[in-house]
Amino acid sequence: MPQPAKTIFATLVALVLSSAAGITGCSSGGTGTSTTPPPPPSSTAVLINMGDSPSDSVLEAAVTISAMSLTNAAGATVTVPISSPMTMELAHLAGTVAPLTMPSIAQGTYNTMSLTLSSATISTMASGSTTPVQQVFSSPMTVSIPLTTPLTVGSNAMVMNLDLNLAASVGTASGGGLTFTPTFMATVNTASGASTATPEQGGMMQIVGSVSTTSGSTFTMGTLQGGSMSFTSGTSTAFMGMNGQSLTGMGMMTSSQILSVNATLQTDGTWMANSVTAMMGSGGVMPVGIITAASGTGITMFANNGAGSGMMASYLGGGISATLGSTMTYGIDDAGITGMPSSMLFDATHIGKGQNVAIAGSGGMSAGGSMMGGGMGMGSMSATGIELEPQGLTGTVSNMTGSGFTLNLAAGSAFAVLTGTTTMNVSQIASTQMNGLTLANGISVQVYGYMFYNAGAYTFVATQMMAAPTA
Image (cartoon, helix red, strand yellow):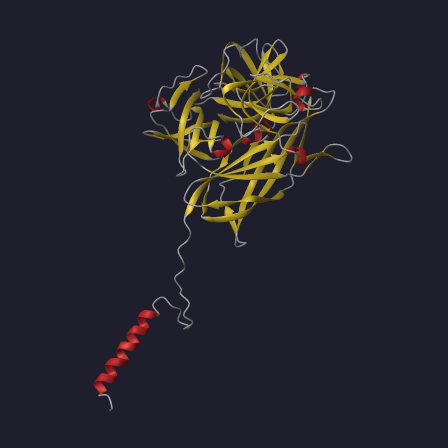
C-alpha cells in the first residue's frame, strides 16, 4: 500500500540528519577520513646523562653536542630539543655519569639515538713527558647509537646514559697526532626516586651551578652546559657551606650563588635535593679540574666543570692557573658520603698532581693564564678556597684484603705519566656502591671516589666500583 507523502518526507529528513551526524568532522571530498587529528601522545621527562668508559692514555676529552634526535619504533625521527650547543668534559666521569639535559619526550618506544658533535678537544700525556698534548677536532661528527634495550617512555621519568668509549674512539694517526671517531654505548633505566639510586638511575652527585631563582622550598640553577635545573628541598635536605660560605636553609640562598647539589630524580620528573652545599657567593668563580702541576703558591689544572663569573664552557679541556693564598680554606666535597676515614687529609701539605679539585675565587676568571711547563693557557684566578672532588680511575685488582686492594694502572696511562705512580691503594667504605661487581684479584675495574695525596703516595677512597668495560 503506498506511503503517504508526509510520511515519506519525514523519513527522508531523518535519514539526512542521521547521515549528517555520522559525517561530522569528515572531509568535504566524501572519503570518510576524519580531518580532526588524533591527540598528540603525552610527553615525559627523560634525563640524558653522559659519561666515559675510559682510555688510560686520555687526560681530558671535551665534546660539544649541537643536535640530538631519537628514532621511534615506527622509524620516525623525533628531535630532542636543546637550547644551544652543550659542552661536557667526559674523562673525569670515568665510572659514573653526569646530567647533560632533561627534555620532555613523547611517550613511545625508541630504538636509536643520533648525536651531532660540532667539535671535540682531546688531551693526552705523551710517554716520557709531563706536558699534556692537546688536539682539537672541529669538523662536525654524527654518531648513531643503537639502543640495545629500547627506550620505552611511559608515565614515569626515564634515565638514558650515554658512555663515550674513549678506548675505541681515540687512536693514533699514521702521520702522528690523534684520530677521534666517537663511539658511544647506551643504557636506559626507569627513575625509581629512591634515595639509594645510583647516578645511572637518577641519583646525581655534585651537580654544580649558579642560583637563578628561588621560591619557597624550590630553587633553580644554571649549569655550565647551558641547562637549567630546578630542585625541591624537604625536611631531610642537608644544607651546608664551604670556602667560608654559610647555608643553613633556603632562606640564606642568594642569586648567582654557586652550589653543589646531590639530588634524586623522582618518578614524576622532578628533582629532590638530598644535600645542598654553598661553594661560593655571588660574583665568584669556581672551576673544577685535574691538577697538572702544583707548587707552594699555585696550581694549574685542566678544567672539566665549573660555574661563576667568567667561567665559560669553552674553558673545558683548557688550562687554568690559580694562585694559592696563605689564608686559603681547604675541604672535601663529600656531602652524603658516610664512612670517610678521618685519616684522609686534604690541605696545603696534602695536595698533588692528578687530584680532581674545585677552586673558589671571589674575583672571577681572567683570560691569559698559562699552564706550568706548557701552553694551552685559557684562564687565571686567585683562589680563596679549594676542595677535593670525586674522580675515576681504571686498573687491575691485586692484593685484596677485607677493606681494599691495590689498583695496578697501565704504565702508559695519563695518570701514571703525569704522576709517576703506577699503583694505587684503594679503600672501600660503608657506603661504597658495588654496581653488581664481585671483586677478585686479576679483574679490571673502574673506581670512582676521592684521591688523597701524602708525601708522594696516593690513596683512593672508592664510593662506587664496577667492572671495566671492554673496548
